Length: 226
Image (cartoon, rainbow, N blue to C red; front, side, top):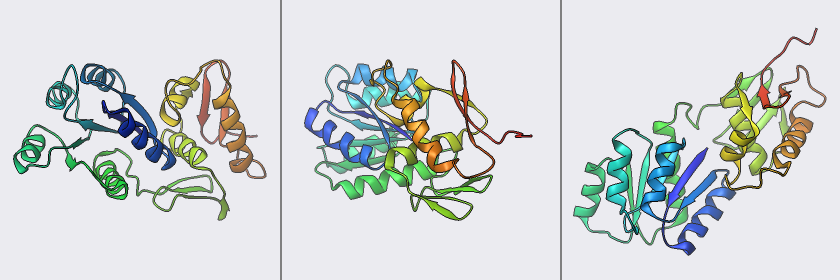
């Protein structure tokens, strides 16, 4: 799942990115309100973490601009802890409000609740296809009841493929959802990750589920092997 962090404090942004990346999320960062609003409107995110005190355009302005056309879940982060600020945030269209300083486990719990409430596919829903099962809550995967040992990145990649099974996903789209969107497109990071995932999910099992679409990317589906 892809999260946009709109935060001008570089240390806070880096801290959030590291923690959320380690939890299996793909993270984008914008350091001011204008850039954040542009990314939020032009790209698709599962959740936006929005600071109120931003340069150029503050969090209220970002939220107002976003809500004119999108209902992406927004969790507001700010040093302000007054009740009227919290009420203003919620009345302006924010889905949750967490004052700084905060405990990361609480932030992560709030994120999971928002994603479960708003995402088309609930994080709590176990995905299944051709004997492959993926449980996002327990962070476990099985093929014909045999547990598959996946890294956090491999789990995020498999989750993306299974959620959008039947769709041809480009390498750029995969990278944007599983890695930092600013990764070097000349590298073969996606191909290497797919190769490793295939080795765990498809090797020794039938039918094969991860297929290459030449010149485009990959698709996750059951195909007639006859």
